[in-house]
Image 1 (cartoon, helix red, strand yellow):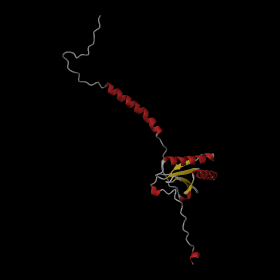
Image 2 (cartoon, helix red, strand yellow):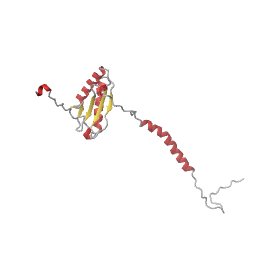
Image 3 (cartoon, rainbow, N blue to C red):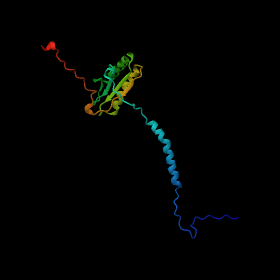
Image 4 (spheres, one colour):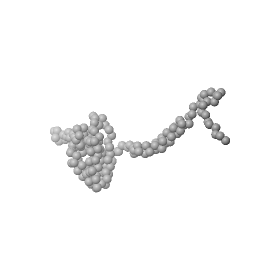
Length: 173
């Protein structure tokens, strides 16, 4: 028995084959689909953040007595409750305020705000200083980020104006 050689030449009497072989295309599409299905859950877990479900307005009588607000000003300086301080002094004062709040039974919550035109590295320095203040006090603190504002609406670095004194009726007469 001799083996017959298989010829790929078109047979006499048959025309050209008009079918397209789609098997490689289907293989590629299935591989891409499997990759997409595997990668999507991993990407979703990496990009997840905890957003509050609902924001509430706190009644004025339930506000904490003393809030701690640190801010990065447009000129690169830092402020604590609208008072400009150098960073080491700000860290020390924040530490003392956190200790005072914790001893009063309140949360150690520090709000961080930054001018819209301030660079990222300055904000990181400020947040590191706040975190260091908590570490120095051996307390865990919560850092709350203030929402982004327009440059004209940013007030965290402007000094608090003294209220004009109104004369009492005895002083007027």
